[in-house]
Image 1 (cartoon, rainbow, N blue to C red):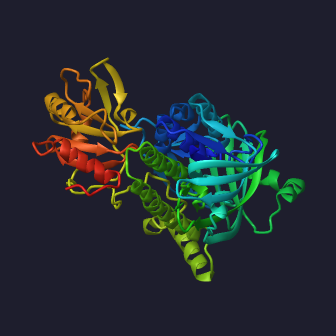
Image 2: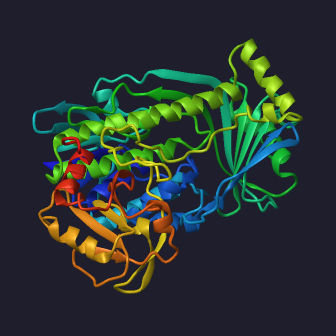
Image 3: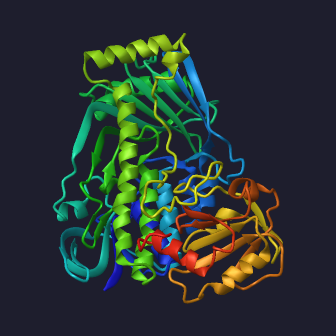
Length: 534
């Protein structure tokens, strides 16, 4: 029996399989396609936290180096710029806010990494049935050679909007679809355009509708046109309208049409992300419009959230109750994303005369009024979700001026005295819990590490401490070379932070005599679905 069967070899499923393998869980990936197929760019906007997750898997830097980096988004009404948003640069973070690269190319990188990790991908396997039992599931796949049965402790459906896993579980996919169509083209041309996101409301060359332009690597540009609901792709080609659309954007430059497709956007969410020994992630669990880049990025966050929980339970490091928190935490994230993207779509393609009149008034008024400009919605860009309201997050030690519990741990440059290398705090995260001690001394960290029952500690925990001192096998010592660790994590005195394997802050306490192995054990228990900490 395989511990985990992942159905769907897209970016979410491949990320999940890789992260499970890194944490010692044997898994197999199944996909109904005969092989990996690079069909256009599809999703292209990879957010910083997604790159961090992929860096833990081993490909984040390669994705960032290959992609087109951008941090400025401009919004226009007709031919006039209304406003621009400049996202914070890398600063204390390693990766840029966004990198544009085709989903297909990322999948190829993920497949290569999974091969290194020894993860088997079985192509040509179409799921037809799931039978859930007391100790796992039995999966039936249709293949060219006949039906194949696979036994697994857990199955995860990452097989997209038309998920076979969701269908086999008998789940619906409630929500709604937008009537408007979007014509999407990848165009290769040497253009003098800056590497920025540009969104146009009612441009002269697509009157009454919208256009979105995004940079990609290799002089490729993604152009999305909102078009009439009866638009036909092949007729666009034959009639020359497609060429005229492209020329209106790029001028007289020579170009190559790399990919062309038509989309209708949807807002949907499964009634549950877990049923028995089966889970849903990515588009199989939730579907949303792409404006704001929340689709693929939220799916990768699903994978990271589920990977550490499944690994902890399958290894016996955490109680099975931990798995219930996947639906709780990631459903909250999906509902937030759906609310944000629904508001964007209501502004972009308003339904009904009243909403359409208000939208047009806001656009016209935005030319002269900052009040109206603040109400123009061309897509709120994706950010990592905070699990502040999760029962796994201990809020007892929260205090003003500290990072938000449930949020992603802020990064910082550090030196490792053992070998004098400069590293990032976030490079030390992933795969296990980290107890970060900031502002104390090395002796405090050593005493605490010695009191923990390693290596039998369950779940395993790594003690990381800022402050120079003699190395100890149970402590990773860091030199806070920029003082950022102290400024961010311990502005009012020595402080301990429990960081989850997915890089989110689970708990914090002052470093004092009450912080001992028993206290750390209670925090770990709460963070893994056990009894609440005290």
